[in-house]
Length: 204
Image (cartoon, rainbow, N blue to C red; front, side, top):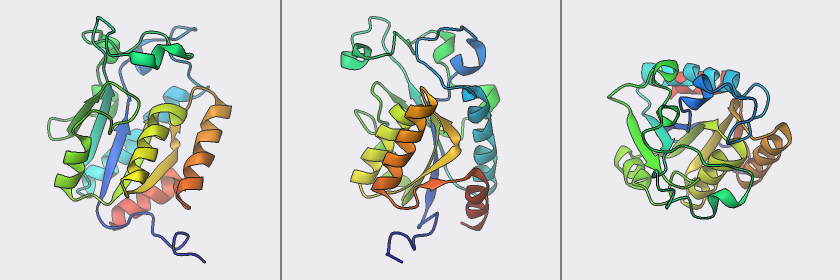
C-alpha cells in the first residue's frame, strides 16, 4: 500500500467547506434553470446539514462559500461562454446563503467569490492559514465546477482534500461522476462517503 493510500480521512486539523449552497436551490423550482442541476440535487444539498451539525459538535470550523456577482455583470468574465446563464447577482434573494436549511450562524466563516474556485481572488487562503487547517472536507455544488476547481486549487496548495460524494451534485450525473474520478486521480482516497466522514469527524 502506498503512502497516499494509507492516508487517514482527516490528516491534522480539518475544516468543512460548504460550497455554494444558496437559496436558489430551495426557492427556485423552474424547470429550466440558469445553471443545470442533476436529478436529486436539492436532496444531496440537504444531506450536507449532517456534516455541518457534526462539525459543530466536534469543533471543526465551518466555512460557507458563496458565489456572488455584481449586478452590472462586469465580473463574470468568460463564465457565461459555456452552458451557464446569468446567476448569483447581488441583492437577488436567490443568491443568499441557504441560511435556514444549512443553519448558517454568525460564528461560521463566510467567503464570497466571483469565480469558480474559492481560492481565486478571495481571502480563503488567509483564513485557512489562520485556522491552521490541513484537511478540507468539501460538500455542495457543482461537483464538476466549483467543487472541482476548489479541490484542484487546494490540492496545488498542498492541502489534503476529501470530497463527500453523497453531499455533492453536478450539472449532470455524467459530469458529476467524471469530476469525482478526476479528484480521486489527484488524491487517492479523496472520494469519501457521508457515513465514514461523520465517523472521522467525531474522532478528529
